[in-house]
Image (cartoon, rainbow, N blue to C red):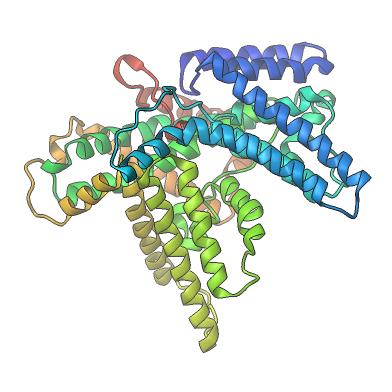
Length: 490
């Protein structure tokens, strides 16, 4: 069930209405049932996997807490449970996501053809809920008996499977989401939360339907026939892909945050104006924040972080981004995307190290310098997106080779895109960047709209204009079929 489907627009109001009508003690059970139904709409059999991951980490959490209390001075017992939990969960993830890919690599290395005995579709959202459950396990371990394991299986199962953020994040921590789930029975309906949630969802649909899906038409057309285009056309296509993937993924998480807020639950903000970043390190503090913080806390720091010198710090950084590439998918092009970002980060670390040794101090940037650094950061990020978008390293290199030739048969004018579609796309992108710039400067747009200064009449004009703009200018595909979110494949 996709957020931008008719089924979801029927499903969400029914779940929300019953959520507020049934006894409060039954709310979590109702949300858990709704979440499993939501997930089973893709493939009912794969609900077994999320249930298995839930049970493993639930039992592990209790076991770790118990072992810390019995052996407070010996971590070997609790650590063994963490290791077993990771082995089981990552084993499931590797089998379903990477087994066939690893088998193909083995066949290529041995120069033989190996037929996989398994044929299955990747379970939707498996990387997201696996990491969320494993993060909970590690938090219990690090708490050394002070962080309480959740004893109520229903509440914990809802934490792992909460439907707004189940299939594409954000990857929540137990300290935020599980704590709020435990308080659901005490919450009353809040008009402000409902209104804010609906406004968030509306903006998420704007990003997805008006920008991402419209940009996808140009991107797909140009890249599917890339041999007929030159540098300008391919450059525009990849710039639009950068916009597409931001609006697609950010649009999903904004809709997820809005849907969760309808139930009185606040999810973390997964993006913070990433294309306004002035450095690659700044970019990763703004892009997919929940995954970046997960890798920082559960991989980078355990590897030693920055505590063991510059060389070790650079190695740890490269490992993290290599794993990040693998997390995104089973393919060499995802690995190359991760390696590129690891190289970017290490060059940034080296540059900072040189500046520190020479005694240079970072000064407040002028507008011109900030703009140049922002453009440069966007361009190197966009180069990496070429590998992310391609289906193989070879295809990514073919794109780059084609961009260096002057030969072309078609132009962007040949795209089946009317002039008003271009106008809508450019205006919508302009609106998105205007919103980002205002947020960057600290302006709280939604709070201003809700304030009495805005006025009731003007407020409803804004609501209805936004609603009809999404409805009229959104792209719904052939025969109004919904378009899947890009990050659902991860």
